Image (cartoon, rainbow, N blue to C red; front, side):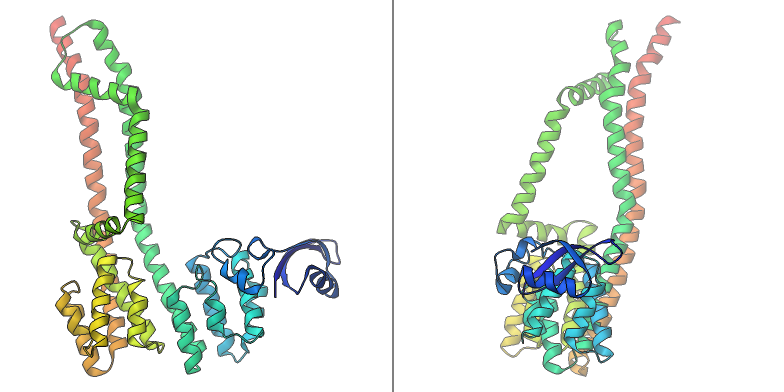
Length: 411
């Protein structure tokens, strides 16, 4: 059943906006009037115009049903888990979420899911039409929850998982925000100093026709280059950035090169490896605890780690598991997973508590990631201050040295 957006007037004459599902525009108008709401405008969302329910669902990622933030999805998942846990049936629970959700994309998506479920489809198949909002990890966990009859518990684990991921991202972003801002402002100040301030000062030396020190001549040359060709530098930097971005996103070799660099780079390589291990362990543990089979879970995790080198390692491990191996043996042979993580996975397999052990690995590496980010940011700040101080000192010395020499000549 299509979903329509409307603008209407209530009994007091106040303008209200919302969404309603109906078989046609006329049916939507009748439904609104039955609730004593007088429609002013009713229209179908862009993704659904001229299409049936299935087509609108398949267009979810391209039009009105665009990607929703992780925080919004986590909050909706938590609310649905609470409603189902309280004994409310699925369709009324979805109706409650539609009524109280403020995000337009999420509201339209939930309304479409509710109609699909009301027509006899499962929650899993209904959500699978919206991959931009509900990725394979989410859909497979919901499928396992529906099959085992523990959908509310699975949704609660999903909400915990997403909130944990959101919290980790927020900590990393907040830790890096100040160094990045400092780097941008520092570079802008230095660019302004060399491009606009230095030429006005050094122009005096040129008019005096005095022999200048080599350091001052070098500064004048650099300053003149930046002043005359700043637009060329901007174009070259932008073109290089776009070229690298295109190569790393759209070519297989470029993506592999970038992912390998992320794991091998000094300082940041160890951080990225810990982050990949934490994401692998947390996701795999959540999937297994929700009843997803190991091979299915490994295939999902392979697409979640966001690194092709790690993903290939997981793929090789999956193939060996399919041949009868346990999880820890192929991971140990690959050499990418740290010995501590492999040993803890082996202990978890032997004790039958693999999910619990994976959670402990994730907790340990997430704490290490936080500590590493704090350490790196504490190192970056003084290094940036030192570099900018050296550049400013070079400029000051280059300007003052000719002035001192002129003073000596006057004496």
